Length: 159
Figure: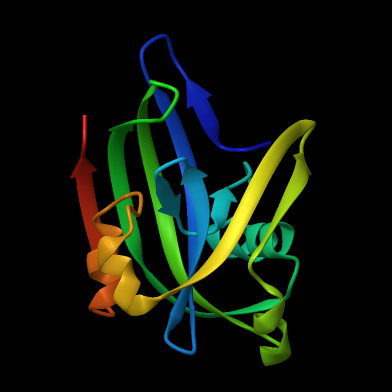
């Protein structure tokens, strides 16, 4: 069961995200019509963040990964694309492919059955130079990616 709580006025979620950079390109997932996010997903109750990022990347990208290092945490207060006020905590890990030949097999769309819910994924490689012009959610993460920041802790309040 995912760590997600919804009260009458706010949602809470505990997530993990993978920062995957290969050949000066970063792998992003379409979030909505106008924005992207890093691949990842919810942590399950009783699961630690390292277990969760391994599972989520395997589910979303279908390839095996190595966790290179823990990079940081973002505590994010925002209104999601459905209009829900949300408080999220996201652990970020740098990850790389176990098999470098898998890199060329990304850039695709697929549908996942996520605990009975249909989730559409759209993954795409972008040049790191392009990242400045991409609407990445949360926006503050661009700074960590572009500056190779480690051990960050961002508190983001977009409400």
